[in-house]
Length: 157
Image (cartoon, rainbow, N blue to C red):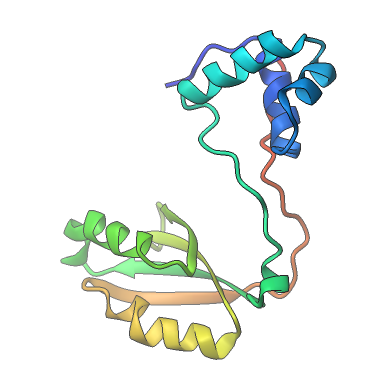
């Protein structure tokens, strides 16, 4: 369900999307409000679930996670009845950063990070391929990153 937002709410979201560490005073200055009304708007956006969380962005390579894999997972006909079970298991793997149910040739798209190819191989054989109902996994290794952002293209009002 879409939440009603005015132009200032949208400006706040654009500013926060680019730098979630800014104080309410800094955000207020950038969007043309005083601190208190800006803080109230941010609070409301959080309560309404528009702002789900504020987090830091860690450079995965600097912490030893050199390899990013996109895994396309297809479930067997029997496994399709257990989509929620598969999703629950995937949520438990810290290597899986993102997971999506998809339409088309595969049922899920997973974004996975590991130390190296050998680490992914272990994860693949010991965890991912062992989930009941998995019929096929096609993995693609990301060679380089050409764009990365958490900032959504929030439209003007």
